[in-house]
Amino acid sequence: MSTTTIIGSQWGDEGKGKIADLLSEDADWVVRFNGGPNAGHTVVDEEGEFKFHHLPSASLHEGCKVLLGPGMVINPVGLVEELDQLQAKRGLKPEIFIGSRAHVITPYHPVLEVLEKSKEEVGTTGRGIGPTYQDKAARSGFRFMDLVKEDFEDRFRERLDRLKGIWGDPESLTDLDTSEFLDAVARLRELLSGDRLVNSSTLINAAIDGEEKVIFEGAQGSLLDIDMGTYPFVTSSNPTIGGIGTGAGVSPTRVERRIGVVKAYTTRVGKGPMPTENNEELGEWLREKGGEYGATTGRPRRCGPLDLVGLKFTTKLNDFTEIALTKLDVLSGLDEIKVANGYRLDGDKITEFPPSSEDLARCEPTYMTLGGWEEEVTDAKNLEDLPTAARDYVNFVEAELDVPVSIVSVGKKRSETIVR
Figure: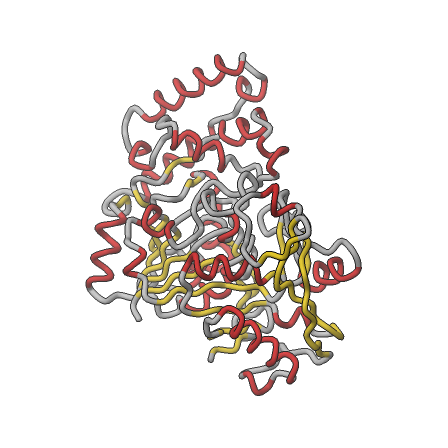
């Protein structure tokens, strides 16, 4: 199949970076279609660990072209830093293209996040993502096609002056240092000279027509989707299959292989309801063994058992054709494994994921218990190498979601993966 998408099925942090890196080794294109530097995709290979924020995980593969799509919001300073780090640490200079319609995160957007208290109230990463998408919706944002225009700096300063007036000249805006931002913009102008600032829809549809291998890499997770997630405790973009249409300019119907990345348990960072959250020994054990701390913020993730109610909702929402089950190794050492197979809401049993965060916060999970295993599984090369209980767990997830589990991650490294 020439087209693949990799989508998070939970609240993000499912291990998409490793799966994207694994599958993009022979890809022609990898396209990021949503979000911005609030994403943190970690790849561990033979040379060590690398954390991506703007760039797709495929940037570690020479010969693979990367596109930052128009559905993204991009911080020029952060992108330049990431490109410099990739060259300094790995000696790599990816062939990067940027959708001309992608929006620009300016220095004032993180400040607005603080002034509007959205970071405090919703629990965002504080990177200015929400205010940038807010400007996009209000038709007052800057797009990458604006960066190459001669009057960009004048327009940027005019916008900043208007914001100072709106907020009453707060010190955080009045004393804002914009020099690093404008320097990064100048560097990106050089990078984007020629054919690197593109109409992504034309470019990627032509690549698909030419039977090139294209991978669409999503950020965050489906339960954080601005429209279908646990609003208002969501991200500002569409991490679901629909985000490919708006965020890359390619119809989702052209994506043949749709891989849902499922962590073997549940985590969530920041605020918002999470029915299976465990604040006792199990939650702490999962956090420490799984290294559940945000790649972008370092915040500890809330942890608990697998939630089938949310997973079945996102599986149908995205019409997954395959499942990549990650972090199975973290469950080694548990005598028994609980899995939520339903909720009780105001005394009534439900199996449908509620659209209301208020209702979800009142849901009590109902659990079933599966057998655990003591053995470590990181050396397993195929399913037959796994302990019986671990194989049973994989088969259980496959049967419950009615989607084949084609990939099982049994460790952090690229090599610690079972491909069926």
